[in-house]
Structures are given as C-alpha cells and as structure tokens.
Amino acid sequence: MMHTDRIKTNMRFVSLFTVMLATASAAETSWILTPDSEVGFHIDSLGVNIVKARFNTVQSWMKFDPAVLQNASVRFVLDVNSLSFDKPAMRNMILGQDLFYAEKYKTVTFKSNNFKALDDYRYVISGQLTIRGVSKPVIFNATLKPVSYRNHLMDVSATTTIDRSDFGMKKAFGGVGEKVNIQLVGQWKNSP
Image (cartoon, rainbow, N blue to C red; front, side, top):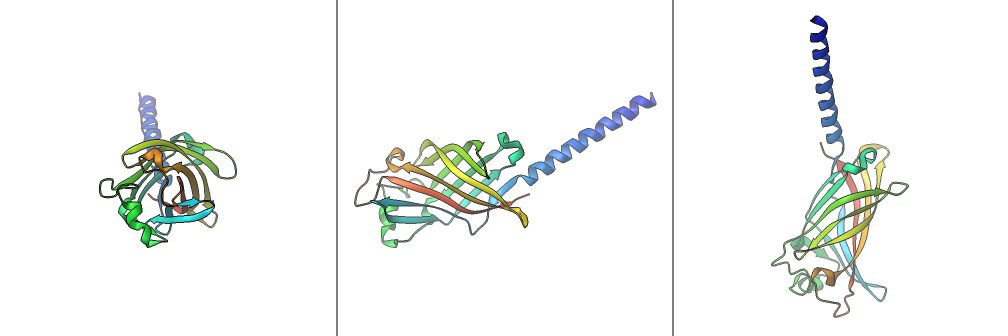
C-alpha cells in the first residue's frame, strides 16, 4: 500500500512539474514589439518613392519558439489615424475615402496562420491582412534573429507587397502606384 502512495505522490509531482515547465515555456516564447520598432509602408511609382508612412500606434503579440514552430503565431492591430507621413501634404488623400477611409475603418490587422522555416533565421509567415474591412491572404518574408548579448530581444525585419485595389482602395491615380510595400523593422522583446 505504501508503494502505491509513493507512486501517486511521484505522479502528482511529475504532473505539477510538467505544468510548471509548460507555463515557463509559454512565458519564454511570448513577445511584443519594442517601442522603437517601425511598422509602415511605402508606395513607389516608376522606381521613385512617392509615399512613405509609419504607424505610430501598434499593438503586437507573438508566440514564437523555433523548436515548436507549429505553435508560432503573430497578430498586429495598427491604428490608421496614427499614421505619419514623410510628405504630410499626402495625409488627407491617403486617409480619405478613396484609400484608407480612416473615418470608417479605424484599424489594419494581420493575423498569422502559418510559420515556415527557411534558413539563417529566415521564415515565411502567411496569414490574413485586413484593410478597409477586406481580408486577404498575404505572405511576409521575415528574419527573426536572437540578439546574442541580450537573450530577451530578437531582431526582426519582415516585408510583403500588396495591390491596394485588392482591399477596396481606389486604383492608382495621381502618380501614386498600385503596389504597396509593407515593412516591419525593429525588435521583439520577451514578454512574460
């Protein structure tokens, strides 16, 4: 009888230890973007940068551990009205009804559905991008590289290109191109 009690006690200890490890692992793989990271876009026309903008209010969440990539996920909520532009005169046009229609559609969102490892810290991240209430699949080419001297930080760069008319924006006009190049540059910070 005493042997059975010892087995039960050991099993409870193993179960508790497993839960503690799982909790610690989840905490170690939760990330948020650092405040100095940049999420933005640029639009080119005939090889010339016509518009460059940055979202200044970004909510971000990422679960990432390269050892269990099937559990990786990322989500962004970008405040459209927080956009700042390299050419401020473009603001009203870009946020107007023909493009972002910021009065009606306050956010741009991205939610991943798959991470695929390539090599040298490079990944393909696929998911749904929603602009103006229209959701479309997009693929980001990303680099996620741990900072060697600060293990709670990870350098990130990610890019994708979309056609703005796919999201209900008016087709190219006034010298503003159809292709929109979206980029993220900065760092993820471990978030317990």
